[in-house]
Image (cartoon, rainbow, N blue to C red; front, side, top):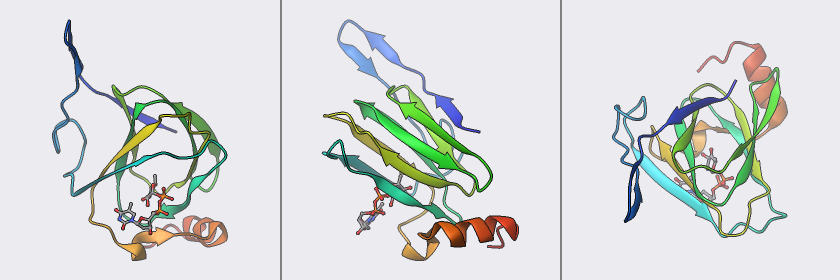
Length: 135
Ligand code: T46
């Protein structure tokens, strides 16, 4: 179920650089960027799905566990590589936890922030999926 995007890394003796361009390295126009850091190890984030937005999550440093649930199956993955993005482009319930100290999680997003795009109740998400995700 998870879709990973490998980014091209420019590495030399000075270190590493990864460029990311809208609609070239990610399959949508990037309308928003946010990042999450300083998450205590026992905390969980997410716990919602989105109706329309697509995003790519990149763990710039450290590591984090991401739970993905498409309404039928659940999968846990670990993000810990700044050269690899996790594309979430379908209705997916997501939770993030087990942030290692120093973790920075970057999100590239296809839409401006809109609280109406969130489904924050798992039962509602599950029913919405079973009804065919009418948007
Ligand atoms: C997602 C996961 C991976 C804004 O004002 N603008 C923004 O662009 C975002 C993302 C959040 N906010 C505000 C809304 C809340 O008052 O920041 C606060 C924390 O947001 P939230 O509780 O939604 O954070 P997470 O980590 O639970 O979820 C975030 C994203 O919201 C969500 O789209 O997929 O990261």
